[in-house]
Image (tube, rainbow, N blue to C red; front, side):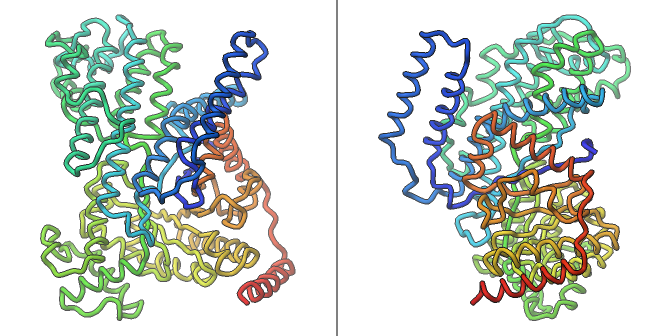
Length: 607
């Protein structure tokens, strides 16, 4: 069960988070100082110095402005998320996975697969443009590039430390010999792990350099925390990471050119940026296997294992960005396109006509228009912004983009419209860059109509085939509570999910629910996280749980390493336990009573 489980925590910004990042860091520092004071073995001198540090932090906070006085930009919101990922989760995640693996060994006598991670992270910061005109295609590209720069910097630091550790000059597997032989220029002649890691360092630096150049091209000031001491590959080489040595490393299969080419293709050029995390994972896993097979299991299970797990969780993008946009914006874009094509007004067509036209275009091979001529077609600024969002998403590298969330989803055509716009910009299942299209149902009427909408969607064979029988659906807790009141919204969410599961089972579609919850109870949050997960309707979780963590809740649940590990533990345990819980099936009389209570409470709330 655990090997099939996936929890995806989506970090989102929210205006209720008014605390400054500076103060949040100080609060974390105070928490760590208090932990230090709780140690029983602390000496009198250490205690006095720790108390002095505590007073210094408190005095600094006392004179600081406690809240933000200006609304942060999307880029600043994203940097706040980066701060949590860098300062806390980068260490908390491998620590948590190490504990989880140890528990599996103790309880089941089985270890987790090396790169298996039941926890994932995503972000809306820089991609959520629903009603926010400040989130433009340029902002999305900037945030995605900044995240790629940050994770390359973090991994480079890890690889530098690992390079110092792996001074091993004997016991190499054939694959490891092949990797080392593919490195044409290296100072390390006998220590082949270092030879390969030196090459990985070069490629990570090339990635950093590429990101810096992209941000400079966009005239973006790189935050001081992200600036790197080396601004180009040549400088890094001159500092001694690689020399002009061209010693060749023989492999057992050196006579087979195809095998040599395989390793050379995997290692790549030292000056080529590394964008695909699968490429890095392959190299690291070969090193891990070689160490284990050569009697160095204890070495392999150290930092190398942590790096592999970090890459498995964070990839080479830190977190994939979700994009969220209103359905009306897609309708307007397609209306402009159909008018340009002379086939009528898409916005004025009925639902069936829209679906027929969308199916026809999705099945065809020709584009709606020449993408390079987008600026000359006479579209207004909002339409151009919508279309350029897809153009930007298509230009980002592997792992940069996650789901495309459609707010105000009220028809099956809303989903097909996004599929067609992706196709227009070259994002298809065949190319492997197709975004998951996620309808968001967030009002009482939307939740009640959702089962019928997805039934219509799943009856389109081409759509189900293109998504490979998998569908993600987001349900909104905050807006539904605002629309109908908490009681009516909660019951509507429960019944809607039940009915959508029945529809998915009918069409043999694997359904994943994305829960849009805020932090407070009024926004769908629940401090009793474990029990909240178990309380979901039967057959709606099934080991797959996607949920938002908003604003101040990010700090509350992930503000320190210990708290973050505890939060990850609760999520993992709850989703696993839910698969073994015998859910209570509401009796017909219970449902009647809840229906009555919902109607009365909704009427009262709206009046």
